[in-house]
Length: 88
Image 1 (cartoon, rainbow, N blue to C red):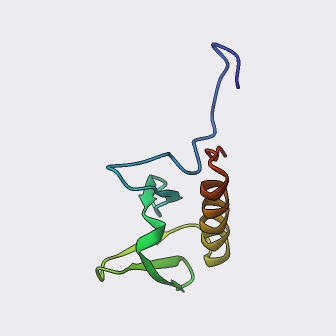
Image 2 (image 1 turned 135 degrees about the vertical axis):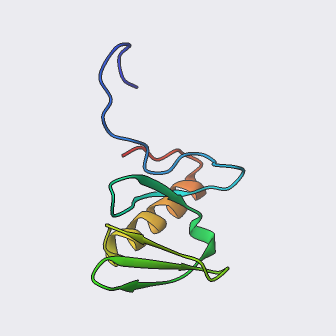
């Protein structure tokens, strides 16, 4: 827990929910964060950025590598099983 008034520059890796769905926070090419429902990822392509193809056919292009995305999703799933919130 951080002290009152202390600066906090790191954003949460995974917020509890966003619109009722748990999401993994990634970074768009323009630097903006985007929350991706990891349960809806169909597959990831490296192009050399990462193109995340969702089950509905839409896609997101993000700065994180394929390995980083998989690591975040695995970490998220592990923390959900433990019942804890992940902070970056």
